Length: 374
Image (cartoon, rainbow, N blue to C red):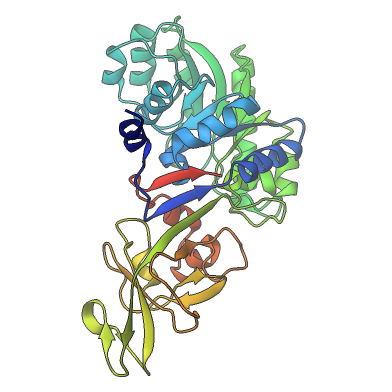
């Protein structure tokens, strides 16, 4: 019987996994919270927690007692609900009004259409809402000049509770930035309109990560708000030495072989060996989150040595030059994305190679890859 029980306790060993530092994440949250005591921090954990795993991040940060978590969709909110997360949840993206007819939901909603107001009033009694004001980014939201009409319409819906007023900054470069200054002026106008309507929301928020870590911007937004939404900064991927990256993507050598001088590797033969090379085959590719733009440009790390990616990154396979590695062995750990900003394969440097942003790389990390909390 004991032998049978031991069989069931055995687990498959993950070839590819994402390692998340709990200590670094909590450090980042506490640091961001310390930047301005007037500002509370609401973690943004949409898009699968920026690739980290939405439930993982929520479970780590819930004990820190944030005012609420920000997600994008009803689907993401349900994921947290099913995981028994007790922290309040704000859905910042658009919610289809039809979906609010199904059952009573314990969420707060960002609203910017009368159809959504009506659906929440009729089917989600006493639900909390955050009115989203378009202060100049010209995406979602109620334009400032249309806000009085919107608030007049709100009088038709007595079951709604206004918990917050929110907007989103297109730029956070401070006083010298006319885009930023225009949005701040518009947000002040919006808040004045709310005051004229005797509306006193608990939460007022316009800044995200950029507005938090930029000291000048932080000081300005703290004069008109009491909360900021922290996303990418929470994961240590902004230009601030006090924040620590929280994620590593790791795989293992699947095969070792020789590429002879003049031979090519990968689709379209984009890499031709200038000499005899020792190469490593990795069972991970762009399906898993290794960006295809790293082909012939990117690096991975083995035993603290950078190894170039050679040839095309394929859907499930990446090839690397391991000629500098002494006595490599199949099964050896390979770091695809490092959490050390100075590494050639840090997320920041990989994003530069790909001419993109770290967000782009993070959200492409496949959900099927095991996340391990360290």
